[in-house]
Each structure stands twice: as C-alpha cells, then as structure tokens.
Amino acid sequence: MISSFQPGGEFEHFLTFATSLSIGLLIGLEREQSQAAKAGLRTFALVSMLGTLTALLSQETNSQWLLLAGFLLVGTMTIIANLRNHEDPDPGTTTVTAIMICYSLGVLVWYGDTTLAVMLAIVTTILLYFKTELHGLTHNLERRDLISILQFAVLTFIILPILPDKNYGPYEAFNPYQIWLMMVLISGISLTGYVALRFIGHRYGAVLLGVLGGLVSSTATTMVFTRRSEENINLAKLAVVVILLANLTVLIRLAVISAALSPQVLPMLLPVLGSGLLLGLTVTIFWWRDFTQQEELPIPETKNPTEFSTAAGFGVLYALVLFMSTWLSDIAGSSGLYMVAIISGLTDVDAITLSSLRLLELGKLQISEAVTAITLATISNIIFKLGLIFIIGSSLLNKRTAFGMIMTAIGLAGALFILVH
Image 1 (cartoon, one colour):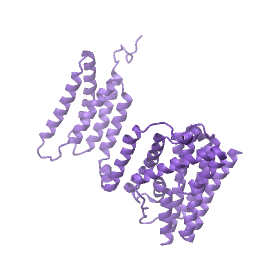
Image 2 (cartoon, one colour):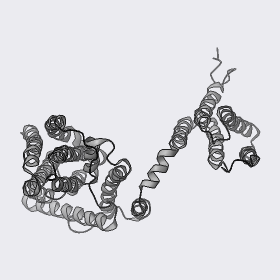
Image 3 (cartoon, helix red, strand yellow):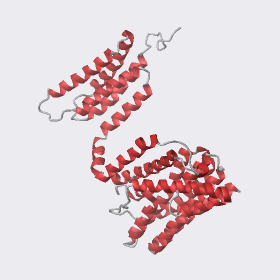
Image 4 (cartoon, one colour):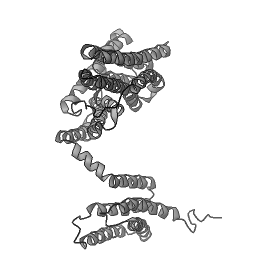
C-alpha cells in the first residue's frame, strides 16, 4: 500500500508546502514585529506558498514564464501597496525585497533545495531583525576600516583565484597561490578580531578584550597594556588578565589554522596546545578573580590588519621561512628546522606554523617534526613577550604575567616531551 505522503500518495507534496509555509511564517514573524513593515505574518506565508504553487504549475505545464510572471506580479503588487500610503515617507524597500526573497525561496523548495532555502530564510530573518545592530556597526567603522574590508575582498576574491597553484624555485619551496592563501588566512582571522574589537569595544570586559586582542595581535596587545600598567594598580590587574588571555588565544588560533590546513596533525598537536592552554587558563582565572571591575577599559590601538604592506610583509616572511626551513632541513635535518622555528617565533608564530604545515602536506616533514617546530616557535614567542614585559612593565605585572606565561610554556614543553619520547 502506498503511504499518503509517498510519491503517488494523496498528500505527496504536503511536506513541501509545509516547509514553504514555515519559511514564510519565519520571515513574516520578524516583519510583524516591525512597525514600519507593510506586510506581516499572513502575507509572507501566502507569498512563500504562492512561489511553491507557481513552481508546481510551471513544471506541470512546462512553462517557465509562469515563474517570471508570478515574480513580477508579487513585486508589482507590493510596490503599489506601498505607494498608496502617501503619509508614510518610508518607501518600504526592505519589505518589498523580503517579499521577493520569500517568493523565490518558495520556488526553491519545490525544486528540492530545501536545506538551502531554510538556511537562506534564517539568514534573511537575522538580517531583518538585527537592523539596529547592523546600523551601529556601520557607524562604528571608520573610513579606513571599510577600505580594509575592501582590500581583504580584493586579496581574496580577485588576486587569489588568478595565481598559479604550482611550486617554483629551489626545493620547489615557492608556491604563489599557497603564499597568498596564507596571507588571506591570517588577514581574515585578524580582520575578524579587529572589526569585533572596533564594534564591541570595552563593554564586555577584560575577558572579551583579551580574546579579541589576541586575534588582532597578541604582541601588540601585550605591548599596549604593558605600557599602561604603571598608571595605577587596578589597570595593572586588568593588564594581567588581558595579556594572559591574548596569549592563550594564540594557542586556540594555531589549533584552528592547523585543523583547516592539515587535520592529520591534530591528534598530536592538540594535546600539546591543550596542556599549555589548561595550565595557562588556570593561572589566568586565579588572577581574574582578583581583578576588580573598572568603569572603562582602554582599547589597544592596533594597525589595520589588512593593509597591503602588512599582508605583503607576512607573505615575504612566510616564503622566507618556508625556504629556510626546507634548506636547513635538507642540510641539517630536523635541527635546522627547529632553529628557524625558534628564531622566527620570536616575532611571529603564524609564519613557521603555516610553513611547517605546508612542508608536512608536501611530505617533507613528519608529524612529530611539524608539531615540535610549532611548539618551539610558540615557546620562543612567549619568552620574547615576557622579556618585553620585564623591560617596560610594572613589578606587579611582571610577577603575575610571568607566572601565567611560564606555566603555559611548561605545559607546552611537558606535553611535547611526553609525546615525542
């Protein structure tokens, strides 16, 4: 016996129209909350089902013109309805656009792209609901921030696709596409933290400030808060939390980068990073409890991470580290790579991390060697920043950050020693 909901059954298309109805109700529910909206719950639900019904009739009659006619009819009726209200200066373009999207999603459901239609419906609802927050974001961004976003788009969607994905030069160490991809990856992570830091500011406290500062630049964050730590004891306590969190964020960032580029390294790398994170976080939480909430938290002034000079500088460093790692590995074995890791890690962990993962993917490194290089670079970076703190920081900052950062380094080194041996 054929079920009513199976093909050929009485309610064969019931679930399709139910999904379409749900999409319309979801978007319409948000529009119902808006006083400026010219259409609400019922209108959006009906428009979505109209899209699905029109797609059905179009398929049955083998006439694609029905879809276009329905699209134009819905749009025209919505525009005319808005024009009739002369007292309201709002043209209602947002609602008109939302209705057209709702109709199109109904069509999409009929043609079997249900998951995509539901995802787009959720995204549409989010964009409509967070109108105030999105407007606030645009007001908080300066002209240079918008330029930075456009620069990132150019780096990612214009330049990257046209670069050759081939190996060149000595040891075949130079791959234009891979080098540029690393620039895009690091710039994207930094840009995310930069925009969030600009938008959120100090409202959510030291924890978020430390995490976002670590995404933008843990070294820059360490420098800024170290210099300001001598102003008063409360600011020094704040600086301790922010600096420790910013440096712990680096470990999380390395794990994310490794997962994206070379998942095979995770079974060995995650225990190492996790051990350092666990010990460092324990100390950070201890000092955070001693931290008294401040009325206003200073924001570290960091350079825009997607300026071309910054991106190009990282690309050159990445290519140089990749070549030096390959060369020294060839003439001195793994010890040559570890020497590069320690030296390059003083100023930047990302370059040696990406280089090591690239060499791992090319089969020129073992997993243990790549993990060792990343760990040595991270420890080297911690020592470098700890030296900065001892040179220009206050005594309170020196003692507290030293405890947390040394415990992080011990966790990294200890876990690496256990895994390697």
